[in-house]
Length: 139
Figure 1 (tube, rainbow, N blue to C red):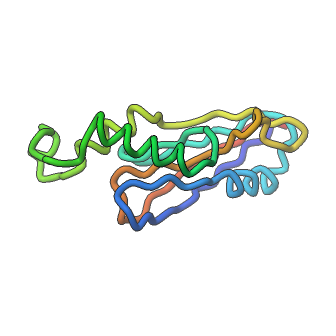
Figure 2 (figure 1 turned 180 degrees about the vertical axis):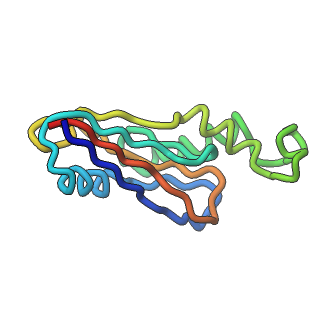
């Protein structure tokens, strides 16, 4: 069995952002030489997420609105976590809702997706450099 590991780096200009990383993950799969197996893609920060869904602007807008209603950034005093001097208590909750990682089957050297499925990096406490781990195992 082969194993491949790579870190993808992102710097979001906004506090909340959704970035389609499907092409980068497919590039990792090509580099790996793995034809059959599994690809794990996970955010390596506790205020970010990786998820699979449709690449549609309206949906991303709806996600942002929904998450902000559930865990609004302000007032920051609403979060005990922010008593530490941070201002990202909401981002930790948003990450928990959207999830840490995805696992995608690899079949015939391709990510085995259903219709419209794409991989996204979700940032909830942006404006600094963050990374995503891609780990692919198989043959």
